[in-house]
Amino acid sequence: MQKKRIVGIALLLGALFGGMSSCTPQPEKELTIKEVVDGLVTRIYETYTPEQMDTLSHEFVLSMLNDRERHALATRYWVFDVNVPVRVSLMRHIDQAVVPFWLQESGFVKTDFVVKNENYTYEVWQKDFPMGEVNLGINGFDKHRPVYFVSIQPQSPDDSVVIKPLIPAQQHFEIMDRGAFTYHDWDGLKLTEVPVELQGGVLLTTIRGRAREAHLVNAFRDTPFPSSEQADQVVLTLSGDPSSTRDVQWRTNVKFDEGHLQFWKEGSNDTLEKNSSVFLMEDRLLRNDRYVHRHTVQLRDLEPGSKYYYRVGNRFSGWSKTYSFQTLPRHTDHFSFIWFGDTHNSPIFGEMAQKTLERHPDIHFYQIAGDLVSTGLHRDDWDKLFGYTGDVFAQKTLLTIPGNHDNQDGLGAWMYKEMFSYPENGPEGIPSEMTYAYEYGNALFLMIDATQPIEAQTAWIEKQLSNTKATWKFAMFHFPPYNFVEPYPEIINAWGPLFDQYHVDMVMSGHMHYYLRTKPIYGDQVVGDFAKGTVYTMSISIGGKQKEWPKEDYAVIRYPGGPLYQHITIDRNTLHYKCYDPEGNIKDELSITK
Ligand SMILES: [Fe+2]
Ligand SMILES: [Fe+2]
Image (cartoon, rainbow, N blue to C red; front, top):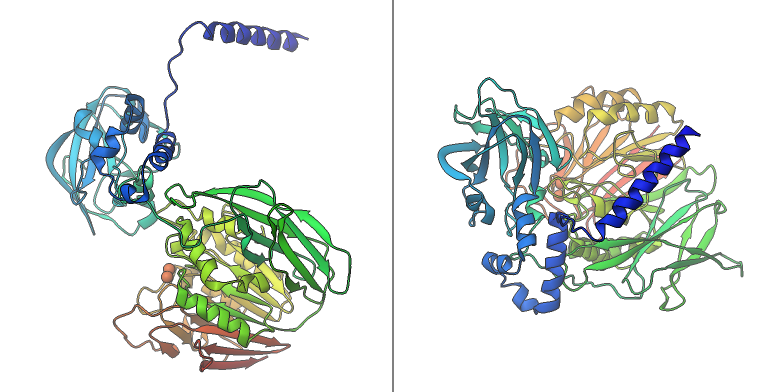
């Protein structure tokens, strides 16, 4: 009863103040950087031709801002609270052509200090702030990726600073000193030179993706494959049991808010229909196709070993071509699949992918080992990937893992995540559907997002391997443990012993843009026997990039470039592995029988 009365009073107070606000002017809500730049982009689209958009200068963008917007860009990029008076040092890359517009006018003064990391040199700007809120502005309207970072020192040596992050809400702190990193998306880049006056301060780390928050100069892009009301980019994926489920995804423009999938079993007249879940995907700098709808339908309770036909679209704009898929019969131990190394939204890959389907129409599915595209948050890259591959992935299920390029400067791989519906059975603490496992016939596939922390996934890998009864075990992840450019000892140390103990037959990777198949490896040593060791492979779906070609003692066969693809057949206790070029010439071959 007492509780109810309190609620009543609160409601009354709310009504009173609510009533008062209509006659008392309220301070205007602070705009976010995103709100300002979203609005600016919309005005640019309404006002200027595509040619004019390519000529926007820093000064011109500034002149488009009203006072409230300008204030937001000067103060709402980086905000934190300090408990004592502080000196803020701001490290600005010397090669950034235009100094952020707000820096000098807000009272920052350039010093003679210089800070360096392994790649860049930074000039140091400083300003004293009283206790309370510290407000900093955007990095600029260009996309200058070595964005500024800051360090904080108390003005009085007797004080110790407590920093409460506000924007961004999550903030990592380091000590400002040699050896500290500054960018989370490149944590190998360490500070090499820090003036003694700045040493020991609190370093606020950042990500290079923040260069994109107000990117407007030389920023606008076009997709060669804009969306329409006709469904396209139709892809079969898998997020459940391959005998009884399939997922279908596709794209349309935003004219209609709904999408439908019709499907029927071969020989049946019974057409079933499902509504899609619709996701509005925005790439605000894509001037000929800013928004699209991505549709997903999950089909469940299908009959094992059956052929289904399907088409997607809606009753207003018509239907796609009719495609088909085959569910896996129960207890299968015979199937084949194809996997690709880095594809990088290349037309070379697209042409090869289409040839593989003509040459191997019986394969069950495709896999790609990361770096599907080159810039993961540029939707035009995804449009090229699907545009160049035609409707290959509408006909065969596609299972992928992300590479470093599918992510973008620390902003995450959210477009990748929206493109593909995969099993949500990965390790806790890792974004779902990025690392996952699936069993197909008598084989287990561990699909691992190696761009996520390695150690955080080790226990999950062990659990999958110790729980399976599969005859064949595969692991696919982007970074190749064995290669001559930059081997991954942390992967060899963390996951290698599990691949040894539970005998993973083959590891499939990409990233280094050359082809490699190793001899069987066990305990980080070459062994003579496939029954004992794991074969590590790496491939590439475009040309190579390595200029040097040093020897690798563990290698059986290598090629400096692609495009190449790998066809694997599982026939009970025998595995046949073949690597082909696009013309169908066999470039590498291997059989293992257990
Ligand atoms: Fe790559
Ligand atoms: Fe890569």
